[in-house]
Length: 295
Ligand SMILES: Nc1nc2c(ncn2[C@@H]2O[C@H](COP(=O)(O)OP(=O)(O)OP(=O)(O)O)[C@@H](O)[C@H]2O)c(=O)[nH]1
Ligand SMILES: [Mg+2]
Image (tube, rainbow, N blue to C red; front, top):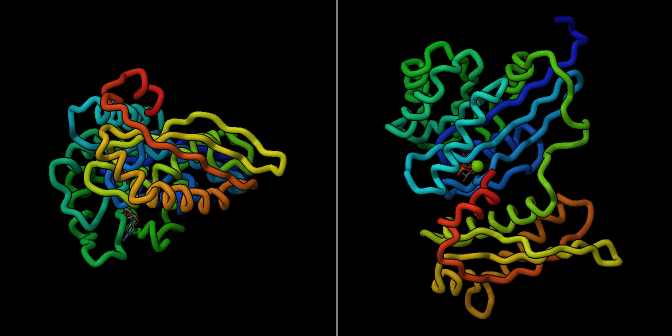
């Protein structure tokens, strides 16, 4: 290969729920592409983040955290992540160094066994008090010997340059798949729904974050260039609906205002949200809906 040859790679970002996959993809792309929260299983879709550098384009595929469970929704999330392993040119395996590996991490390492040459491991959260990178490295040496690994903090930015140049060097010759100025391929209405969902994840607790999806209703552009997005927060139970609305509407107002604030940085035009809350007790068992929401 000559130095002038263009390279590109689809990079599948894999790991346990809450390992920091979305934080890392956002940091590498230099943009908030995917939503982030402390609640495991924040990401429900494969979200693409694109990084274009002179002579190289990396297309990151941030996947839902791999989690052992037979629930229909978790099975769909797992299928989605595993499918992306064989499709990818490179695999970025994110391991949370603050947590002991355990059975869930072993199951993931087992899935990855057949892909060793294309895996780059990110030992994440080395900035955190509870971080034990030596324990994570020992786990990787044992389960995936030979895998190149990098100690990083996705949140603080430590170690990201070395990781990124390794990814660029490992990318095979190939064309740019997206124009240079793209950093994600998500549709605006999907991104808006995701930002709203992030605020639900950040401000509600217990089962509520996982009980909610954001249903797109309609959108239109005002004469002054403001995008008006109408959506519904769909919960599984009336009690959840009450919490989402909050006292005198305080919760839904906070969700709306914070989401509008973030969206102002994401889009070149103002976004105004019109949000309602409704209940659909069976949404997580509705295959047709899950197919639409999780893809
Ligand atoms: N201290 C520390 N926290 C981090 C780091 N990276 C991510 N986090 C935090 O870990 C939590 C989970 O981060 P996410 O990026 O949403 O994790 P994820 O792997 O995408 O999670 P799922 O989408 O649920 O699978 C968030 O609270 C992040 O702020 C890091 O390098 N250091
Ligand atoms: Mg995520």
